[in-house]
Image (cartoon, rainbow, N blue to C red; front, side):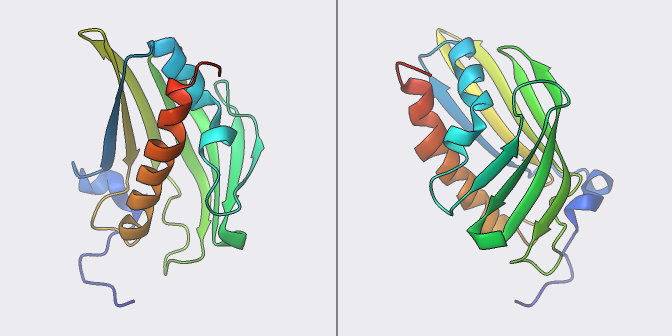
Length: 163
């Protein structure tokens, strides 16, 4: 793949102040508590497509976990840096090795943010991968993958009667 002159490392994201981070919002009739608990059940929803393996804890502040997928094509280590019950969860990607990219550590230093809000009887989950924007190499593969996990795995979990 030929990279354009506008290629920017996610690691240098804060210098860019981009407002084009990958964001998707899911709307539900379920409570913020139900949405929060579904997000915390990472093993159930960030799986099912690419022989994913998750190791570590995913529930509490400062928990760390690793994600491996695609036979080693994707490795990342996340640390929970913010956990506000029924409101917000933030992961900091502390290490990454994305073997399908030229810059394999492109996710390192990015943040995965789950913001939960409520309005007019609906619960809104706004997912943002801060640092994943169209100017970085991973965007074309990673944005559709996040959409797939969130729409096809997390959304059904939120609407399931038992979590």
